[in-house]
Amino acid sequence: MKKALLLIDLQNDYFPGGKFPLWNTETTLSNIKAVIKEAQSKGIAVIHVQHIADPKMGIAPFFNQGTEGAAIHPQILQAAPDAPMVVKKFADSFVETNLEETLTGWKIKEILVCGMMTQNCVTHTAISKSAEKYKVTILPDCCTTVDEMIHNIALNAVSTRVALVPSVEAL
Image (tube, rainbow, N blue to C red; front, side, top):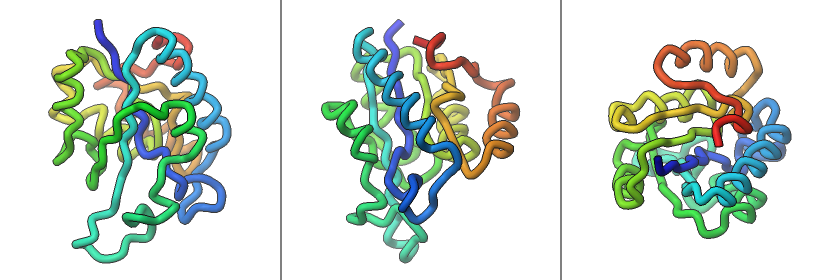
């Protein structure tokens, strides 16, 4: 079964020094870099997903187009420099993007989801109507949000719909 690893919103604004730094980012970053390396060694496709605020909605608090904060974290880009970039403006990475077209083109049947924020873009992508045709797994150790409690509540809430598997077991 062909798999793809989705790297959702690993953008500078979510890291220390950004406009909306999250909880546990250094551990999450380290775990994601390790899972990227493992995925690449197994021929698993890696896809960057980048949220860019819709300029029609006015200036957003973060992820504004052309800002350093909206850029993918440099360590993630270094780990997967050739991975395609899907740009989104909604929490669900499938809505008004080329994600589904990319997955179909690669004949992907399973998606491994990781990134930021657990309760928003990660879960909305994982339970998207468009994701129903795939086997979907969230890698809890490769996700984070504003704090541990919200992270755990979000994972518990989505656990009846998608698999939650530590990254070392998912690949």
